[in-house]
Image (tube, rainbow, N blue to C red; front, top):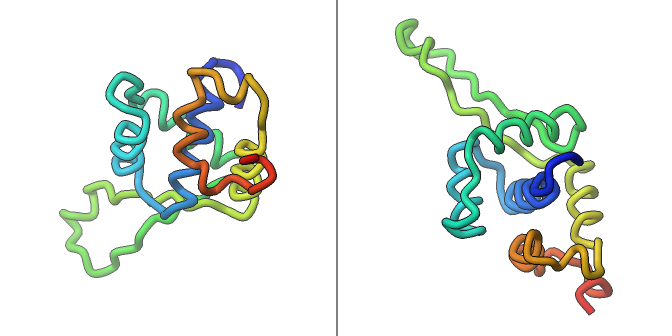
Length: 126
């Protein structure tokens, strides 16, 4: 995910959080803001385009719950889409975590790399 400066950080953060557990967009945004702090708050305007790109690349999938016994009036209410990491997504997360060197540890991405340090391979951690 190129282009904007923070898009790589957001990609890493989303993949890392989904590696821990599947979640819907609202929960994902809440966890991102808790993880990165209030001064790095992510809006839905940046989160959902990131999710859309990750979906298109096959790194995550959507799980839309089916509710067959819900009354017709309630069916118009939008159900929450749960996002899950795919095998390719897990592989991409490991690639991002393995990126070592000064560029990966600058202020922009340090907090995210550090947050998922436990998922980083031992040789990269050293």
